[in-house]
Length: 128
Image (tube, rainbow, N blue to C red):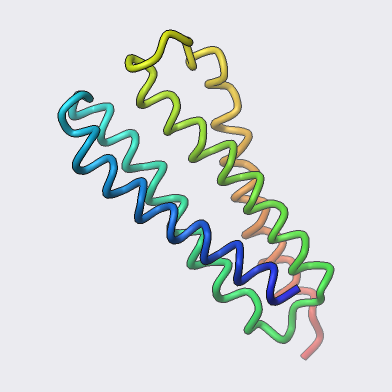
């Protein structure tokens, strides 16, 4: 489980840096300030959750089941939340109207919150 979590954290972190640089350089020329700010929000939340996942394996009080739940929730949450934000921010650059998938953004956010709630629940119900 540790290897999967750390691999996912590393991939999410590396992609966040790549997307952040892409936004700051390539997209700066074609997006408005509001669109760039929106894109940056997706990058920030992706990086926050990459860092969150880096911590999870070191928490010995968490069961493997809880770690797996957190991993799945973060993976889906980042895909839906940050992924939809990237698409919505760059909507003007494509022929497809990504606004039709805008409803998945809060679902992704809810999944990210749920991952943190698993940690909270595990922390408070664990007998030390």
